[in-house]
Amino acid sequence: MMTSTSARPAGNFETLLAVSRQALRDGDAGTCRQAAKNALDLAQARKDLHQEARAHLSLALADRMLAQSRRAQLSGQRAAFLFQLCGDGAGEAEALAALAYTLSVLGRNEEAIEAALLSVKLSEQCATEPALANSYTYLGIAYSHCSGFQEADHAFNVAIRLLEQHDRLSYAYFPRLHQRAMESIRVFHERYYTGELPSLGRLSQLRLADELHERDAALVGTLQGTRPRMQPMRHLLAGLEFCWRGSLQDAQAAAQHASAEEGGGGINLLYTVCGHWLRAEIGWAAGDWAAAGQCAQQMIDLAIQIENEQFVSVGYLLLSQILAAQGRHSEAQEPQRLLRRRERFVRSEAIKSRNAVIEWQLKVRANHDDFARMESEARRLERLSFEDALTGLPNRRKLEQHLPVMLRQGVERDSPLFLAFIDIDRFKSINDRFSHQVGDDVLKCIALNLRSLVRDGDLFARIAGDEFIIAFQDVDSSTMSSVKERIRAAVSGFDWTTIHADLRVSASVGVVQAQLGDTVDSLMHRSDVAMYADKTPHLPGASADVAVRVEPPGAVPPRRLS
Image 1 (cartoon, one colour):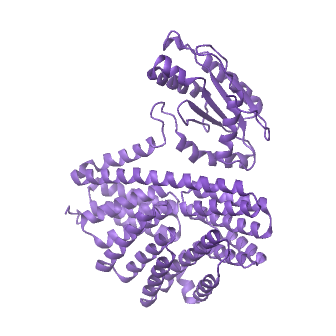
Image 2 (cartoon, rainbow, N blue to C red):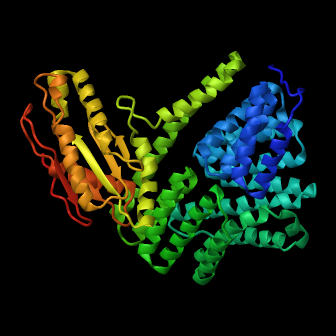
Image 3 (cartoon, rainbow, N blue to C red):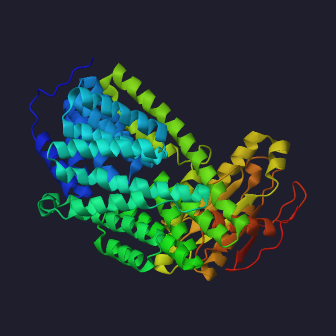
């Protein structure tokens, strides 16, 4: 077992960590993270493994509050591993509990349950009863995210009982709230899979118990920073129950109370996601299909942004139900298809992440002096996961992550987003006639030449073999006409004979303007259709100008040419 050097003088480390933990309790995620980062720098300079573990744990908790789940996952895994190296079972249990929550949010449910179960076992051996209750709470959350509702309910009950037995009534607020959220998710899923709303008796029972708990004046006095941060979620959960009971006026009031009490930071984004859910349910119940569909889509977009896979799933299933309730059964299949694709993406990312973590652990065991280099390597790998290896451009994953933000900013600024879909004509014939090396050189030249069109705030990405997309912000239609000419000059005006004497290259481009209600998929689909509509068949080796058309909002593009 590797030993800790925590016996060395801590200097300002303990002060920084105390500031970080207090900021966490106050809901100040920015201060919490900065203090933890400063503490980590001190620990790394001293090569003190135990202090590094404690600082990583504080970083994980701060990033969780900021809805930075991947960063929280990385810090949580490192904290747990370093606590294990130092032989600190209680610290490892706390880190594993925090890690279990982050893994649940990221949709990595099996790993989350594994981490939470190990946290419980370690807490049983070497932690206090309140710490054990904490581990059971996160075990309940992990079970809830994978639809193990009975197991989740049992874990929450154990956590509440342990806290109440040791006069930690204020801390029981946390598992009680997550127990209510779990029951709301259970009701939602049962309605989806059976087509009928199940009994709401258990949901009402949990709400009434929570309200009784809330009315304890002494308890309220001890919550201070914790209670106000959780109040919006209490209103939202109550609103869902009222809506499902048909009390739409009460549900609307609950939604308004939640909005009025929301705070800032990442936790606010989670409340906003749940607010969209509640408003979508209200719209559905009221027969306001437009509002219901819009709120469900907003829920999906924001849940994807903060990478909360449970609510991504709820959003897609809810949107499918809303469409089916209108008799639009064919359209209702599309959210289900997108959800399946999202689930495949999550599984792929989980495999990549686990491999990276194992490699990191092996290197730390071999030589702790390489720890700082591993930090840099992890950041590099994270950056490369958003980068196309051949051209150095952002890849499709980066585009799909950032495009919802650009769409939302366009609406907020009243400045529409334009999307240019660029496809190299007859690219397969270039590969077949001149070689794949020439084809790769063409792709790199296209990327290099079109970079000059991209300003700060725009996004230029390679999304497939010979397909590129440029997203333009804060630009009008007249300016886009100039951009079209520059695209034409950049492609057809390049001296391709520098690569091969007989090489000629042209491209087809579809340019569309974002419309209100556009999603990433709908906007990319329209730009793809516009590109194919403008593609002109020509003989291999013949030169051709770039065909560019700005499609007005609502226009129906011509059929694709074969």
